[in-house]
Image (tube, rainbow, N blue to C red; front, top):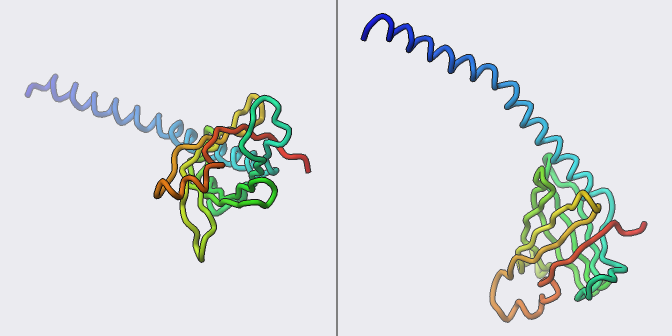
Length: 162
């Protein structure tokens, strides 16, 4: 290896080191901004209850009320879905992403801990200040799915009046 090649190799290594050192604050800031967006989304979800009451554009399977509560950490949430004002209740927990999405498993309270019955997603639509509930599939035997058919829907929710 010649003297010129050694110098160019050392120069290249220092260039990569300089790029890495200069990029570090931007990478750290991106993580901080991402955490801040998650906190903002968590506040949006948990500020009020959400409901489909007064939906005139679709024919919903039931009247739903969603409530979200803050769990531990910067983006964990848990909550409850009430069906037809106390007819049935389901529980869920998940993580709010920086984009306002919660992917979760819905649990029916049976016994001490409950049983997971469905996969679902809650997505916040910033433009219209609404949450979209999207059913992603049942968990468990097909016979069980029939008793939880009210979860098999796509539903829009807006802030419930206090």
